[in-house]
Image (cartoon, rainbow, N blue to C red; front, side, top):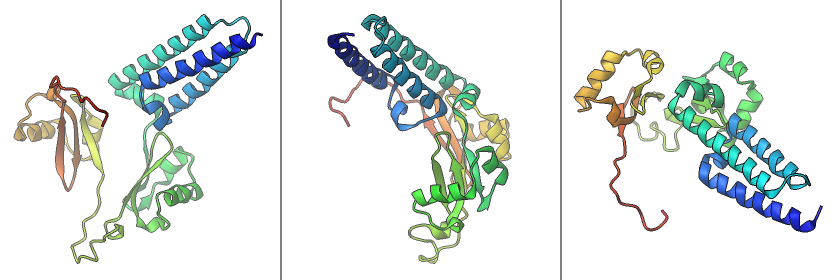
Length: 236
């Protein structure tokens, strides 16, 4: 196989992967979900095998990269609009510690033992599991932690403030769609949510991009961003 042909394929493969990463977004390199992991393996095999295959031309390499990028893009768009499919493909977070108590069933479901849990906590600079009120094992394998109020960096005890129990927030609306299972988790119903929205001046769900509820803060609403026609001239 000619050195020149290998060089051309390497350059085309490098540029193609770079364009794909920019097109598909930062998620491809910052959040490794199960689909992203499979995608990375497939891309490495695709480019690697094509480069050293004498029968595979540069045109075939470009076609393969373009087809894979198109499939990945379509998959992302489908999972954005069908939330249930997103859970199946990307997984869902598991609450390993809830209210200061370990959820053994959830730990077994995620194949996490206490040694692994303690390691993940140490990566969050938490060396005492008693400081943790909630620990969520994310779909990409990272751990998100909410400390108990008395274990905060500046503790409420130091300031002689009354104890305020931490509480999780729940997304109730996503892109104009009510998430009814989360309403059930907080002991509310659709009628209660619509009444809350009306009190805040929202009569149409289509105007709401995201809404979450927390016991201490109530309902927080993010509206859809309106296109102002202005674009920044410099990167922020």
